[in-house]
Image 1 (cartoon, one colour):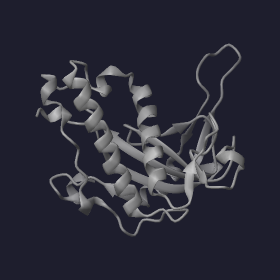
Image 2 (cartoon, helix red, strand yellow; image 1 turned 90 degrees about the vertical axis):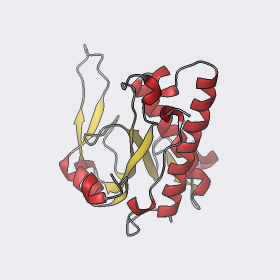
Image 3 (tube, one colour; image 1 turned 135 degrees about the horizontal axis):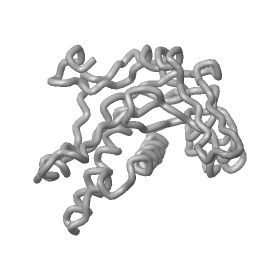
Image 4 (cartoon, one colour; image 1 turned 135 degrees about the vertical axis):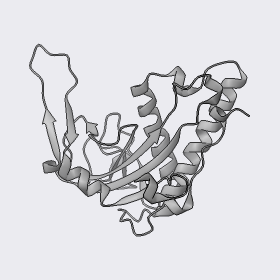
Length: 212
């Protein structure tokens, strides 16, 4: 089987068992979520390639793929969480909310855990500066290697978590003539909080020190 439709691995030694997580989430919940996400990508890409389509990574725009991966992660994490369910409100914040806390498990602005999947190593953004827990799942995807059959499978390589305040964000508005999307970005102080509570870091050559 060509590398680009092989299943990405999860390296046990890459997990920080001392990481702090909210709402009784565990490191094993994160590990199982990563495994299930890798499994999902493997199965769907195996099917697409068997039908002479490109992998999902090549088929979708990069920002759409990131949003798709975020949704897959949310749904997988819900399977393992003892207390958190998916926020059913379209456009609601955060992605994960305590089960039974809000009517119909739906809230526009509530308490819980926001989930973000991104290729970026930092400078993560949202639509608003929000106060609360966020978990970042950083992934790597190869859509450039030629021939494409030698491309590596997409995999989650780092997971960070922190409880951020509004001061951990910068906000960029827009004037009335602009069509630019309103965004908020995590500032350096917020980045330090996230990196101080790393849950997973894929070891390179099975040595975390070589990867950092």
